[in-house]
Amino acid sequence: MFAPFLAALLAPPAADLVSEADLRPHIAELASDAYEGRAPGTAGEGKAVGYIAKAWARAGLQPAGLNGSWYQPVTLVRRTPYTSRATWRARGRKVRLLAADYLLTAREAKVGLDRAPLVFAGYGRPLPAGARLDRAAVLVFANAPAALTDLGRADERRARLVAAGAAAVLTAVPDPAFAALADAQRARGPVRVAGDAAPSIEGLISESAARRILLAAETDPDALLRAAAAAPGFAPVPLKATLAAEVATRVQRFASSNVVGVLLGAGRASEHVAFTGHWDHLGLCRPAGAPDRICNGAVDNASGIAAMIEVAERLGRGPRRPERSVLFVATTSEENGLLGARTFAQNPTVPLGSIVALFNIDTLAVGPRGAPVAMVGRGRTPMLDAAVDRVAASLDRAVDRDEEANDFYTRQDGYEFVRAGVPAVMAGGSFADMGRLQRFLRGTYHGPEDEYAPTMELGGAAEDATLHVALGRAFADPAFYPTPAAAQPGVRP
Image (cartoon, rainbow, N blue to C red; front, side, top):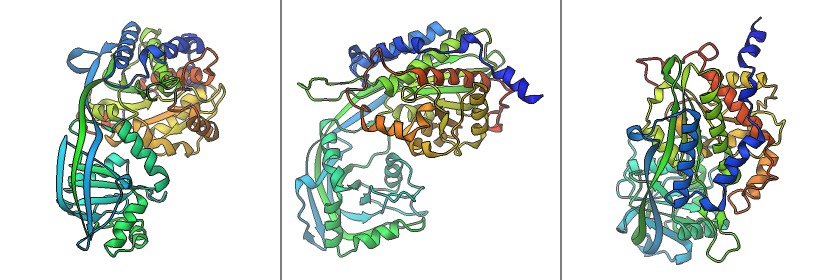
């Protein structure tokens, strides 16, 4: 009895189906050269967020940003290395490092550090209770063993060290990657949200140079790293070494925005199902004079925004108005570290506890038509897994239940919402075939070649967009997905 009822409940009407032809004009527009790669703070941003807001207004959404607008402002800061002088001492003697061995950036335009004690903090795992790093220059290693699951993202590790009082955070990077990372930071410095936790000085150092410092301080680098990779609770180790530095940095503040709209529910309007996806990409990603300077971001993530627009259109104009409200958040600066998502999660325009489920949509146009539905976040928010699988099955989509796609868990906007207590996953065919996805990541990903063409494969993207229409309808229906305790009135997440 129940299975036929569920099939009837979830079977999509023809009006809910999304075709390749529906997606193409959005991707062609958002990934066109006129948008110059949609970098935050550029004219391309203005075009992109305006396009999204107008599309959502046509779909029947209402603005849900700040002060009744479509937009939630996000103030960003780019810090580009300019000049630095550093003196490393171990046991009172200078350690000779070349300028090419490290790269330092400061929080403000000019920052000095006077013989700060150097402390080794392993891989940046959570510190023991009460641990303090006041005034210290903290050295961490980036090449953590895969078995360490308590690290979090780089920004989380940095924030923990800053909260413990670190004046500087230095990350040792394997030598083969160091030069490329340093060059990238010199070309376009890292971007952060204004006001985010940041040490006075942070930087990169080659692993070989970091090891020379440790050896000069009469410590065994390999023994320290083995201890840091052992049981949780590794205590930072003070070294017989210091760092003195004077660092000059180009500090540029600029404005960006998330785009936020809501379709008010017919009944439980105070509860929300949410869809997120980032509108930004890398902008002008090649130097002047290059044959093609623009990273257009057609797959990443014009395809996801196109799907969000079509989902909004079908839920907003469809024959059945959802019972719960449906929230749409197009985020800025995902490419710089999920910054727009973090800003919304920390300063939401609706109560976070009202969001019963959130679906992030990113990089749809990879898998072909007929790909199984895989999930980034399977097992991390178990209350969603079975329900998403049921919706996929109602569309005759096969389900890939392994957890391979969780390799991307911390690399997508949904992670910031999970950190804030919101159940969130990313579902679709792009994550079912890791070989195909890796070929995209090693090929056109983050390059000028990720651009729209009339021959672009969008069969899988269309199926995934239809899947998200069905997810929106199903999760907005309390008969299908009862209200979790955290989303009930008076209960905090």
